[in-house]
Image (cartoon, rainbow, N blue to C red; front, side, top):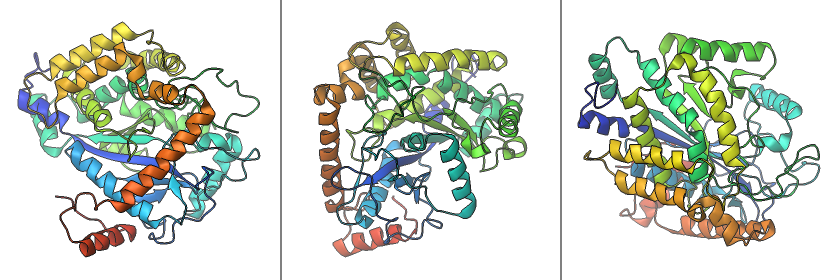
Length: 446
């Protein structure tokens, strides 16, 4: 469905960019010394079994904030900001949120890592995963971006090309993000180091800072990759992997891109893809809420581009993705201070994105965003990972201390500033909004 040759007009491309985007941001609760917190789930929050937008993730100290789908990046970040304020206001005295995807210092026996006790089934599942995988490998955190088509866009796409299913439209986007995972790792990777007791003795730790440990083969994955040739093959291979004990359960599919409908993968067969989940980004330590508008807006542009161009041959997608996985690992383990070996290809792709969005009215300056990304490609020192390395003068101990200072600064700022999205309300009204959020009641930001 290419814009030039398949009849997509400028308004439809704009509507594709303005897709529904939801964020899932994970972070550890820590104490003032930068150790994993030993406090329970915050008592001022609704029980974690019932709270639907402030939760625990795999571990007891992995807090997860889940925003509702929003049509603008600004609105999504407002929800994320006010959720941060609600969570931070409920933390125990001295607790902070760790602004880095690799965990802080851990005890040698990992006795400070505790599995979240949400419900009995999940707890048993998580115990099995921790027993089979190194438990410290479950302690990474990150940003997941969920992106889906609006109902109006779905209707328009179906009217333009009735023979092309919406599942195939989503598969084009999924394959595109898998193919260009390496580019997003380069642009936004932010885990040059791991800290004390993360790597086991059997793991060969890099002897130099890298772009993204989390996005490399040393990170959170389990080695299994499903098929993206079709929804049927995607579901089938996940089920086969469970039956062959390659993964413990459907939920343990940690692919860079997940096709989503409900918690049951088989629902994809009967109901189709509702959205895709991108599990790509490291936390951005330079952002108070750990993700930038640029990171989200680039996802929006790429999503629209992949769907509009419809350029991937799904029959050979799996072979091409296998190559892309190796490519991403190479980029993730490069020195963040050096240009990537794929610099020319990266610049060409961003240039195509820039041309694609010219003369289209969007709520953000897409061409300026592309110029900023080209600057990062040409000058790696302005990428997040390189900034961290330079900031700490290539000393991971200094980096740890600097991250701890950031954690304290963000905590002080966010708990004391006016409630995000409701700045014009009275102080009493703002306090009531935070209380509602802490008790799991949804609010609407206009």
